[in-house]
Length: 249
Image (cartoon, rainbow, N blue to C red):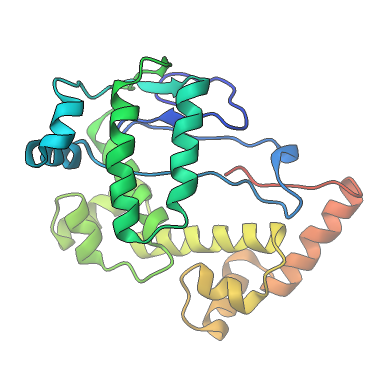
């Protein structure tokens, strides 16, 4: 789903999503690799960054002169997709400066290619919905670390007190409770679909103390992490022996 459009996608597709466009990928259970994972590569950048670079570097300005940033989602054709996939794959083995240089070379490909189709228009949504999306995106990007109220409030242009009142009014729970729920949901997925140990999962989802994680998990889920994993694995075996299950990513 990109903006207002829902359509299938397949291995090797490359899509450009404009800033703030609502999007989501749903993976079929049989799309995972032998370890139960789906691999994708992503690079995120703001249009303001590109504009500043174009203004500063003549070499880039000559390549992007007069370019308009798309407001619709784009799906690139076979040749452009091949070029972009190759560039992103090579970035994995580079240091920070190498990735930056590779990104400069990639920008003209992204913004001047005619090898694309339009695959989604932005959806007009209310301010509160957009703000909650911004909050959720921030939590998804930072939940493995401590999220300070001052930081998330600043992210959405509010002071701490106003943010706490706003969030409680919109969601019916405190921001701290919301973050805990997200961490526990992530922990449940890892317990279901990975072989990682409970202690490793504890730190992966943002808890800094294993006994505290076990207590919180048991209180909210009704089972300890170990018993929860055993229960869901037993259900999977009874449901369809030999199948591979994968969460939506």
